Image 1: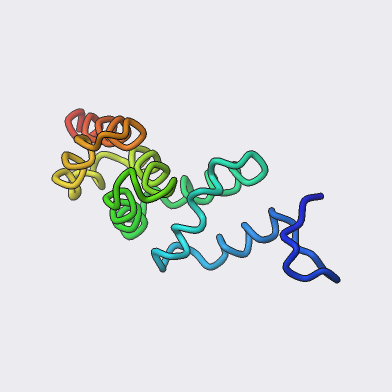
Image 2 (image 1 turned 90 degrees about the vertical axis):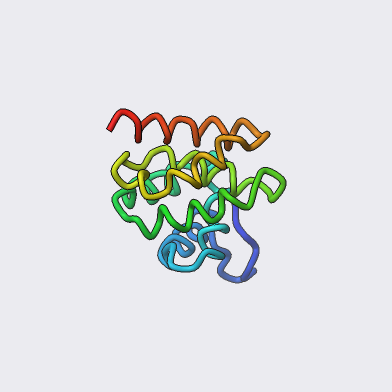
Length: 126
């Protein structure tokens, strides 16, 4: 059992810590920025993935993911992960963000640009 070490008498598991972060939701960009990198860690990837995918009908989550992705490739893992999740949203929601997606599609980092191109393709396909 891996623990976070926050309380030596009652250590939280990594999964408990992620569940706590997820329970705070995506209302603040800072919390979402903390959640996203955990999508690339095997013990917590499914938790994060399920959480984000459960909310892909919510434009406010899309807006926050877009803000994070627009930070660019040189701002840690969160922008790349945000861009990847953006491409999972339905085309009708993505349409509102077409200009931002065009900008992201020109990013030098393929983890961002390729995801933006997939999202733009969804818009074109209707």
